[in-house]
Image (cartoon, rainbow, N blue to C red; front, top):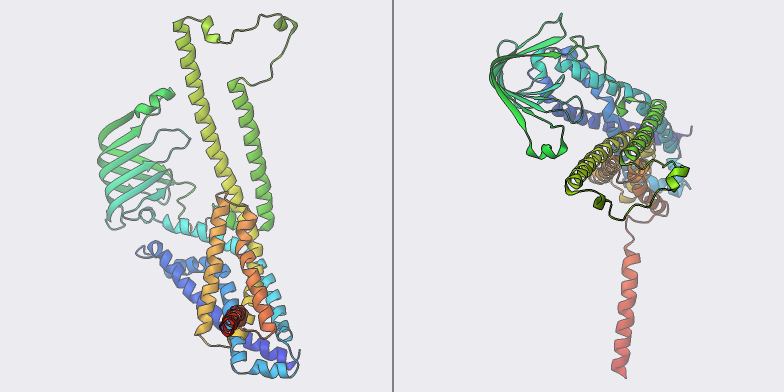
Length: 482
């Protein structure tokens, strides 16, 4: 390795490491701020808090790494240009591409490491992080319920106005929404003036004793025409006990891990296997629903027989064959069947949309593992020529450019992912849209820095305008002479 390559690599590594540590610390503080409600005031020991932060750190890398590469590139090449070191290199016959060669190799290695990290470390950390959060919240029954908001506990959403008592197990102003286990099941709301949480570490049952309250339950009639009346049942109670089975959720052992189905927890091979299963499940659902709806509306293929061909043709108005009472019965039955079919179609359509949304999320997670590797290259080829063009190092102008570019990249990336998950575009385009949009900028900046052009070629804009004015003034002066 030549002296110039060692110097450039050392300069870039020092800047990159410094920027990465500072940005990583800032994003960690942001993470603490986002989850402060889960950590503060819950009597957690230092080891649990440290584990919480350790498991949350890897998810920050996809944000910090590209921004660090961008800012370090601008600062490094801006300092070299500002101190006329690039001028000395060019006078010695060393071009910008030659100076960037060793750093391109480093960024290539960094991209491979970023892909490996995204494919192996981040899914494992995400798996540990989500399970650890859930187990922290349920290490004590009262910890699973925060004041003034709905809390997911078992098959219930519980909200309390105030907690008191030594362990926060005395509740005031309790509101409970029971989750329907099946589609179309009745919804139940329970309200009570106060209550008490009773549990034991030896039992997986959380007992919630409610006092002085009432319950409200929607009733779903069997007949669809009666559902518009919105019937319900309401009752009051002096004391009611709700047993919540937390055998799969409320584990005191913080090492317990039982959540493993989210797309962020899977590597490339697992995502591909899961996507294959999800696609087959959706296709089977479509085929099954199509067959059922065809049988329901009578679209199955008719079986023709020799006797069927000899039957008399039916009249155009079939209802004319029946009296008024029979007509009313036929129309009522047809209306009921139509309402039932429409409800079935709408329910299945919603289920298929949810399945497709889940597929899109997994596809987006798959593409993101490659996007982070390409983002390192992209940010380097934007930052390095930009620093050489603006000829400013330090923490002033480079930070402004880096923040503007990264905000644009992150906004487009977030917008593309959200839009693709809802079916507005393909997951591939949604995940890669930010890279596709900023790639021309990287090519343009590299071209202009190589040819020693400024950031914006004002001559290309002003010269045509000057020529137009010169022609107009020339014609005007000729007209005056004549």
